[in-house]
Image (cartoon, rainbow, N blue to C red):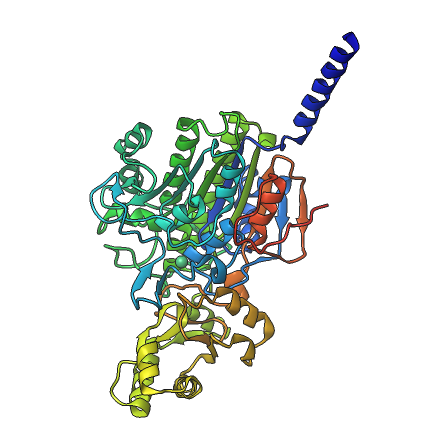
Length: 537
Ligand SMILES: [Zn+2]
């Protein structure tokens, strides 16, 4: 009898120990940071003026994957955020652009449109959003599923798509910014009313207060040696300005909209993210919670002023301070080894074509209007006066399948008509038939990048490739979306928890992020995951 009791007791002790060992070891909180439009070299170009406690601390104390690239095109915001968090590519997760034309209906779709939900937090249509167009689960979903839905996920960004897609299908909240009244809002997909703390934050009117400060440089302007002079020939003017130069008053037009194109948009996001950690008690409930932050202002500033501008440098110097504040908050609240942080970007960016031309570098502005006018002429002389071209989203030409079928037009013939028209345009490189990408004559790296971005239900028929550094755009400002390294090469840093300081030079891809997180956190990878686990020393 005694022996049996002892034996049972031993068994119990044994099983308790076993359970303790098998329980996944996890941090209290995972913080994902996406910097919208951050090129890899920004980690280094401005590093002499970064502080010791922000980006440089993450690089010094964390894992720095130096050759991290997007593995698909179009390299744009919605596809980027979806791919970071799904460990997948647009061909599988379905977010092929910020916008696309749905092939079944012929209708234009915005990535996070959802007419079945309502706006929460303001009046208007800016909250008619949800992740319903995302076809796979995210790492935020998987972490939550693995904890029987007991953990919390909160996602925050000025841009709706920068919050909604990272939050996945099971987020407790995704918040984005509405510039009518300078408020953080959400949709009925997540909740019926804003929590009290969000309402209280909104009533502080911080966006108004920040814009009233105006935007001058953090340091004397003549000390910005890593950037071009503030001459601004190729920069966009902000509303109410006569020249795109410092100081920017931020008082023209709607200041609450202008805050997006200033470093204060990121600071407002940081303030709100810290408030969310405090008020939602993230990481304090015995589960591993997830906070997904995306800093959108870097993208607005980058588009308007370009990679070589003082505005861009100043925005990164201030973002570095915002990141330092988040890291020091995490230190105090949880301790560095109880939090896992990663930082990446949703895409990088091209130089401003006019700017680099002046520096003897190749590149230019593709005359889209002329190309489309010429194409329409070529189509009507080949096929008569019919509306064949439906849209041209994401550098992809989308043709009317029904008309093509009715008229008996052969795809190969249509391709030739289109290609011959584009061949006459300056800056054109190649036209790829998206139904037979692997038969195209382009180099294999680009074939795979285009294949990963192609989805038959949402992509066009033919993709127009321009030569490197040729942009569809205007004389001022710049953009991204191409297959080229200047758009695909972005930072990837992991920091905290069990991460040991090291640099990895072997190429990693954006789909590796969620797969690696799933591996480290002992949960399943997202449903469409194609990434590999990043091998560390
Ligand atoms: Zn952008």
